[in-house]
Amino acid sequence: MSLEELIAQADERGLAVSGVACLDRCVPLLGGDDEALRPLWGTLAGGPSDGDWGEVLQQTREKLDAAGEAGGGGAGEAAELARGMLATAPLDRSGTALRQWADGCSAGALRIHLLLDGGGDAEAIDLTAARREGRTDGLSPLLAAELRRQTAVLELVAAHGAAALRSALEVSTEGRRVLRAAVSRRSRRDA
Image (cartoon, rainbow, N blue to C red; front, side):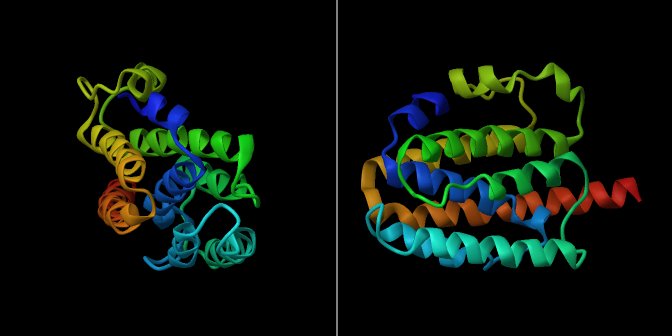
């Protein structure tokens, strides 16, 4: 099943996990540490109304905004996309806004990985087709891996519900390490 289909069929928990996982992998661009989204992950174990999602989301925004202002965040389009993912997260973990946010996070995270890859013509890659078809042929390794991670997170949650959170977090943690290394390589190259 393609990434686009997985998002369309995901329940509210799946959408929230998908969005948080995309955001978590992009936290290095926001100046956050590896634990920045841990409280938000903690709200995902219960139902849509459990876990104080809105309150924890607001605290997370404040923490990451402060980290960015302190000079820890990245600059450029990739960092702006990551800030947009955080800013547009709905305070209510249900409904159409959640689906739109998860879909936007998916597209944004793929765009970020494409920008950070820097290997070739970023405008020549059709991210919409990659999400719709689920194929990684012709994609850079960094972008293809992000597409696979997003798909894996949605499949895990669809198959195992709340029991898949640990596995989804592990997928996201590995992706964050990869993105942090890509950001570091890019900043050395651009220096």
